Length: 249
Image (cartoon, rainbow, N blue to C red):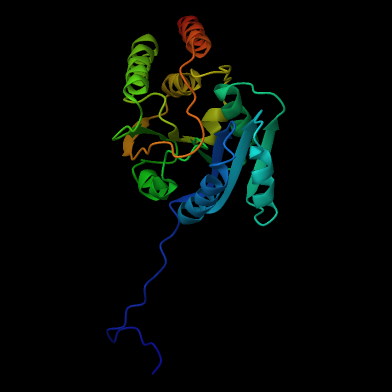
């Protein structure tokens, strides 16, 4: 018997994608053990939430073959793109390169170390309110060492006080931005202050910022980058510079 509307037959209709288009940016430095699984998960997440998507991997001067692993995936999937820094330039510089190369209206980023389950992107995107909303995740629970957790909370408190951000977890690597915000923002941070800079610019330009919890996992492969004195010093210098720039506007 043919399917006849009105006779108790209900055909499941596919849900429209939450986003029309999405660029997923993955900054990586020496993540050869993680990058393949993270890129595959990013492709699956893009397909689940967007009508069109791409995955932009930024290899920030890796020496362990991270870029080669990505090129192997690119042979079979044209949604994957690779941006390469011949020398390590820093976390902020890697994100800036990824954002410059992102082509779609919404830009999401997370780290290439596998500490976030990208399957939660669909639920995360659903927490946003409107195409112009900046959506910032916060780690709940946070699966870092006690020292790293204390450093993270201290940095968030300092950045919030200095720049007036009002965000729970400033450096959580699970954020969604309108591309037009990134295009209108003269980002300059090369290190860990990049998140604070973007959020400060969003506040300045009047973009609403929503927050949502995201599950954080311990790192399984590779080496956790430590809070080296040089990294901390650079972040503090950049934060001071951002505050001075804020005061002159």
